[in-house]
Image (tube, rainbow, N blue to C red):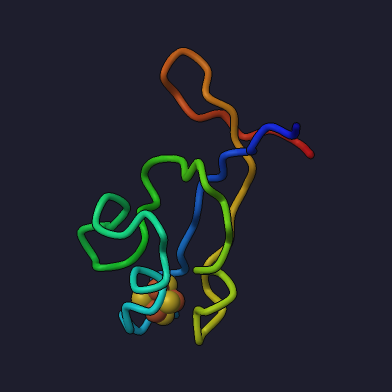
Length: 78
Ligand code: SF4
């Protein structure tokens, strides 16, 4: 059984049109929303389905794989 790899998302704020599509499709819904009505970017996503990246109309969501170390998220190489 494979272990899920958490990811940390990044959003290009200059490109984001605040359409809300990433939040609407996110299976974590209200628990994973930023103050800017996008998916959260300040904490790791444990599901990492990446549907938000696929649905974003301006393709401005990216991610890096992370691991949790002492309560912090640290980027890892795949
Ligand atoms: S789907 Fe993309 S453009 Fe729409 S709110 Fe999310 S990051 Fe912004």
